[in-house]
Image 1 (cartoon, rainbow, N blue to C red):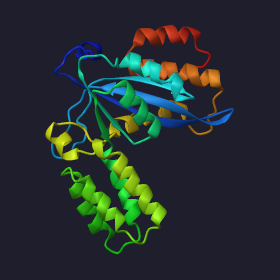
Image 2: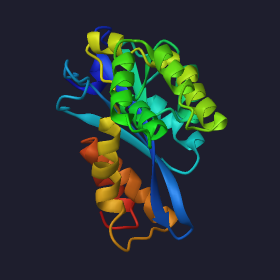
Image 3: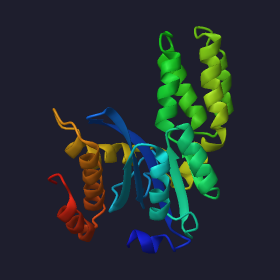
Image 4: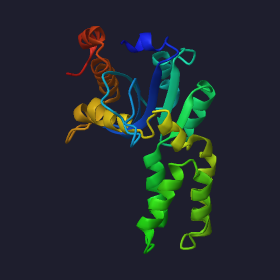
Length: 245
């Protein structure tokens, strides 16, 4: 079923994921914002993603102010489907999505949280056991217990402990992983991580590549259209593109 049609179905669940990727240009490394919109099912035991049939993408080099309108056109805030966003905790992403899609389900990527906790426990002789306990708390909607556990990590400086506890506290409302899994929702942002490779890096981050801005932007439009299966747009873009696809 086409994504556009799914957006008008109240029973549909549509995912939106957003992240940044660095591309090398004549002006040095520049960040490109990449968005992916798709319908998928989660594997019940893991909360990870089952195979995705189709996706649509949007990309923009530079400030997110040029990215967000294009993403909102791809996934309209007023569409009737249930919208679910799984993101990595970047402040600008969280602020924008919360303001623009207030009725959506907002999930903090579980695996980013675990990675942050693993770093906090680094050096402890019982680090792995400690981390396993924290994962159990997270998967049972007990992130407050994780906050308490981090606060007891005396090998960290006060600033380090406060930073991690603050991160957990700020995102507490997006860490109801037990509930999300019961609802069959994804809790990881693997699909957007994969999209970095398949949409951008495989073509635009090859050995020795360096892009001029106009060539970079043209190629971004081509890659997004091609990977979104919008072949009519690919044909039109190829007629005007200044770089080879």
